[in-house]
Length: 154
Image 1: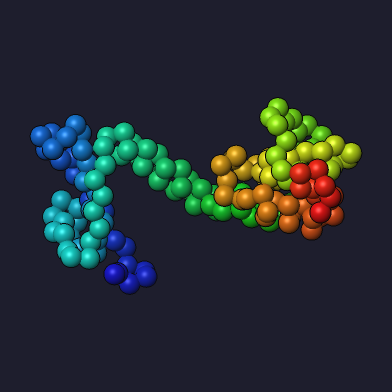
Image 2: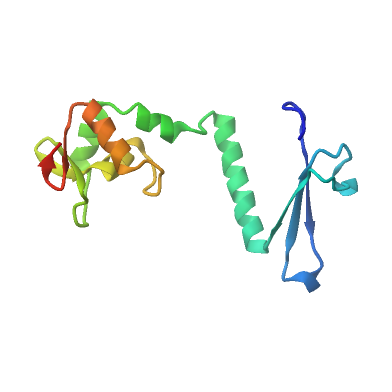
């Protein structure tokens, strides 16, 4: 494993078409030579991906790079932890839920709303964010909101 400050060498190769349609090999290691002369070592890591997977990986890396450059890598997670009562009330005013009500809900300005989706919306996080309902309810409780499980106040 390279030292913490050592930059690793990354090499991307397009493999022979006989192995598959546009298959790429990505090698990551600490070889000190430049890309074209990379000689794999036992501790190196290799990843084989299709053309579509490679394009998705490049897009994800570029997006991460932009976030790092702007200093906003963990902004959504931090935002969830920093939500205020005002954030929740403001979001609840325009929040619309067209599905059946989940087990965990919250009362905001007299309206019963789904707890987790409301917290995610207030934080600007996507619906597939890793925040679970229990964490969302804990945040809402800490802000003084009436939370409910299957309609009963908890």
